Image 1 (spheres, rainbow, N blue to C red):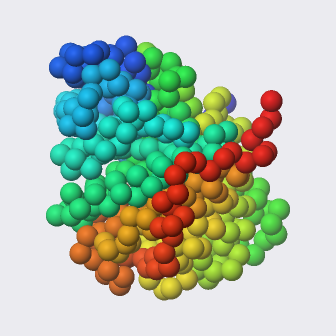
Image 2 (image 1 turned 120 degrees about the horizontal axis):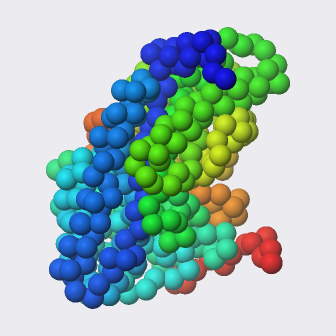
Length: 454
């Protein structure tokens, strides 16, 4: 039974504390679209997406009106395209035609983004995987709504260093091809380790092959709600702090559960998961860094930051998991620099560097995210950063990722404006010592010993 107090409390969270449902993501399997004829393949892809997703945006808007809950994004995730296009695509240019078809379908149904221009290469690359990866720069330069991801490692398989090396080159090429927009293409490209099949958040969303034909996944968000709750227990013990975060996460997740169930019922599509992640925005008061400062840090990046973030991440999971039938995706606290005003302030104040962010990724979701770096950063340096993050994910049995933007023509001390939810970012310095001899070794890093659990 929902009481008037709970209704008023939720309304206050929405009106004053930036509570929203960050995304309703419709996952769609395209496996039944596979065809050796490229023209027919594109036609099947377009028809399936525009048929299954035609009501996604209107339904999301109706749920917003009916319940008064903001739903910021309506998105689509699809089967990794390297699988779908394998029979038809003989060149990177063939894959680009699929990217353009996906972009056209996304525009037709009115979604914000479509994710799944992806390849899963954690142990090796098929010819199709490599063709798709090499097509990414042109695909992102010639589309608006496509998001791309490549999974280069896992706890069970180790890290595919050939793919890691290639992705450093692809990120640099993408930056160059989209340099007129401050290398914006790289903001829609992420490299992962242990990528989940049911992630509703971009740019890493794709519809895994183990999923239903279509499914609804929902990502909730409420950093501002958590911060406001913690203001009321300032100076209290860790026990009180943890209980407050758990109770607040429970309330946030119940809102997401309601939206997910309604969307599932109205669209006639099974409910998949709720992703519990605290996802910040550039809006003032909607920051994960602000939560860390409310916990007791002068600035994010100060000594104690990793411990405070570990506490926050764990309590969000403990509170949220009790509020939903199914929890999945990434489900943690995001720390994207350009999308979090508190993180931006910490970088500008000198308290936060890439190395500290890397340490923080050991205990949260999901990795080095939305970090602008100098445009002259070497491809091998980017590959080394990817390898470090992948190693953290592999050894700790968690998802990690790298989404860095080498902004062509800009250097440390300058800023770049991406706009919207992507925000803006100061260009952060990168370690200048060389790692090319390491990155250029061929093969893969073996899986850790604790991955053998059969």
